[in-house]
Image (tube, rainbow, N blue to C red; front, top):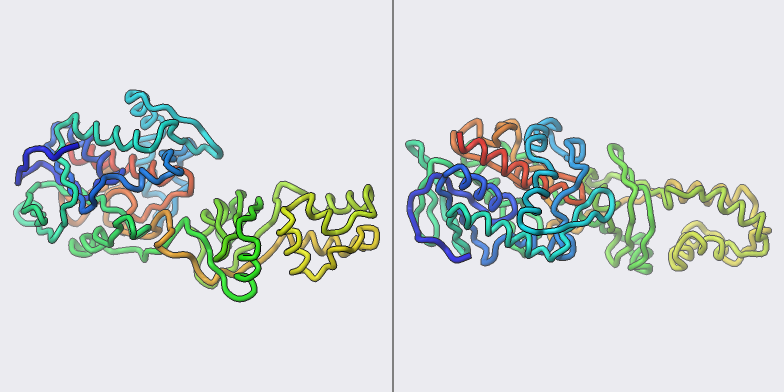
Length: 402
């Protein structure tokens, strides 16, 4: 969408042309506000573009406050209740965009993610919003009820400023710490940030073993002290990934172990004992290959010091019990995560105690709003973080219209 006629004064300025920023700007425009969106990136909504393998996992039908992590678990309740996944589906329908559910309530666009971006830009254009891409933000000041944003394209003023510049995840797409810098400038505290929804890396024998079966997947229950997720796990050249690992990474602290229950929906102990009873001449490795990929079966026996060629008839029940117990509680100790480079989202962020849960407005500076990923609200994998973007944006837009 081409830039509209430049104007130095607006009713509201939105920093960030991502999901939250564009959505907030269009909804503010619908209330009659003259809105400007500024972003240093050359293209808008790049995280929307890459989401869901290009299909955009734009929300989750199970979005609820207990699917989000925050120092204040109650903060997200208001915004999520007032703008729901159903509300966003109504918007998609109006634009002729269709969708489907994959698993666990995850909704994906039937068209490419570009359809969502086109919708967001179309909504902004329909209300006369101005979009300035490739525009560097140099400084921001606040005096006499006005915010002055100094940019590479000049200075712009507005009584309302919405910060929607995201977090630190995926820096190659332009992520910066601007939101946190601005929050500190205006007196807000920051909950320490960390990479979330991110693969684990390992060192030593674990690294070598996992790399040797890179590409193999297995259903697991991944558990820490405070959470557990039943989904797929993927072995990689650097360690472990897959939905179960990404989910549990948001709850993991450095040095903390992660317990893996392989095939949580299967009673491995009884399966092995049944195989011994029905096929006693079968080898132990062949029995495990009935449950796992061959390379994983080989690795399991290697790590548990069980000769793979041993026949089940020659394997005592106590040995099968011990093997099943090991697979039900395989403890791993990640050396760390892959960090911001591959993290899907930022955990931590702007302390919600300084924001209104109803409007996302700063309690310290009137007319200042923080929305989306930069706030200390982090959703599970599977469309939850987009729903937070839509909901927090809608809350800020409604608050700004008052």
